Image (cartoon, rainbow, N blue to C red):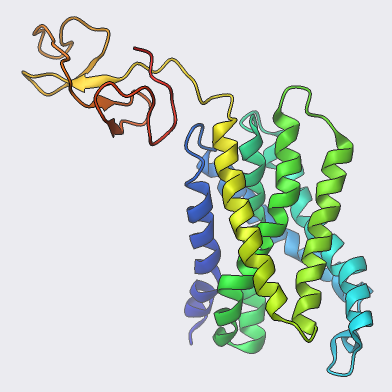
Amino acid sequence: MQIGGLIFVSFIPGLFWLWFFTRLDRVQPAPKRLILLSFLLGMVATIPAGIINTIALDESQFDAGATLTAVAVSMLVVVGPVEETSKFLAVRFGAFRSAYFDEPVDGLVYSAAASLGFASLENLLYVFSFGPEVMLFRAPLSTVAHLVFGSLWGLGLGLQARPGGRSRLLLITTLVAAAALHASFNIALFSPYPLLSILIVIVGGIWTYRRFEWGQRISPFRYRRNYPQFACDNCQGLVRVTATFCPHCGVGTVRADKPAVCGNCRHENRPRALYCVNCGDRFLL
């Protein structure tokens, strides 16, 4: 396989999962440039993480003859903390410092981007070392696992955006939890019960998905001055619900029971809807 194909195979899972989760950020979508920046910084974070892991660990600790205790110590003391801290710093000194980091779900969005950037470059290194078939495991499991681990400290970082949300203890706790979960996932792969790693990814993936939905429900931008619109009978142009004539053709308007078009995302809702089912904005009627 050509190098372009290897890069495609390595990165397409991470980009897919990035699209899948960031599309859940509907109320106040994060800027795409900051998502891309976080993804790139996550890739860069693999460099110091790889150097530290190489210096601190001995290959013999992962040989077939290595004991599970030796593997567990390596994962809990080195791999988990080093990799999660590297990804965390990519967001903490990147997107977190932006004025656009202004609600809890942003922590989940940018942590997902950084984690998937980290996982994607790591995928490429594995593909170069073991061949593209390694992605049969890494695409649905290891790639998603990185996102799940990052969502823990991402949640802690996101809660800093709430009024009075400056609890360092909470942030440290979520970072330690992410490192421990990361280590547990890796330990399970070397243990007699590797299926535990699959369970971690499934449960963690569901939890992360629900955290994104929770972020939409508690978003401070959920309720904005959103006047729904409806189509003019004469020219089919969109008219705000409070208007008495069409601004496009000047004909007087009659709303009757026409579909309500969201003034924010342009999604068509049922007549007399109270909120948009697509972006969650409450309508002012």
